[in-house]
Amino acid sequence: MKKQIKINNQGKRKTKMKTVKMLREGLIESLWVVMMVLISIFTWTQPLIMFTLVLIISAFKLWVDRDAAVYYFVAAVSGPLVEIVCVYFGIWSYTLPQFLGIPIWLPLVWGMFGLFLKKFQDIYVEFRRGK
Image (cartoon, rainbow, N blue to C red; front, side, top):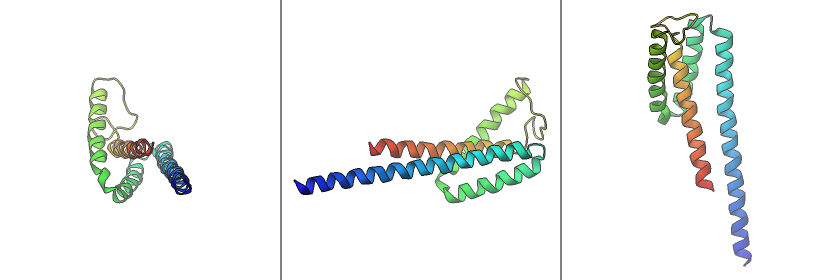
């Protein structure tokens, strides 16, 4: 009986540690998003600077999580394609477009969004397994 209680307590402790780890990962990923928003706010009028900063961050994130490259590239291609079509048909426009009606940094930002979705998908799947 004592052995069973000890095992249950260890299981609860592991679950709690796993939950804390997932929350920490989610918070870190959210900080990346906040950083991207701040970069956008402060550098959107300087597209080459914004492109360079987002490229550096993208390269770092892809180096850390190479498995997420597919998510990055699917988002970096499909997102801007939809945006180009929308701009072409006049649904919206950008103040400083450099390429086919969109800013040159936009594909990189879409790629970062793909990484964001991948990370939160991983966290969600891990959380569901732990229940």
